[in-house]
Image (cartoon, rainbow, N blue to C red; front, side, top):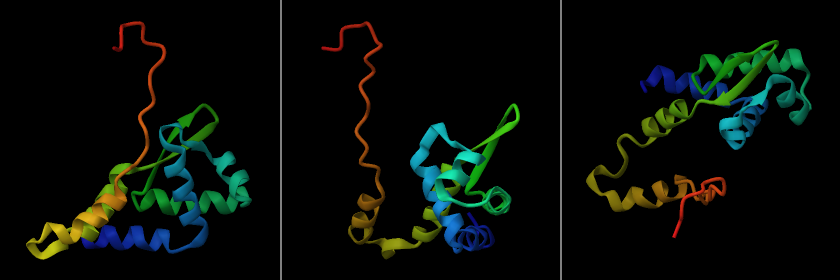
Length: 123
């Protein structure tokens, strides 16, 4: 990610509703959320939400998929990774032990889900 794209992303996230939307979509994960559900969850009028979703999409932090008459939005994890990588690009000055606590803090601590639909022996 270059400086201009990073500035666009920071500008998009510098508004309270857009930051809430981005965090909500990160939490929603692969399921994403419809524009109406995002509006309802955050208590924001749909026309205002549409504007905010457009800003986030242009910044590369979210993307959308049309599902009939509905548009489903997702956090763009590559965009988020790019922004985080931009921030940490020059981290450490050759001393990885300085950055490791920050990297550990960013790492997902989600437990993997056991697929109970598999029929093969898991032992």
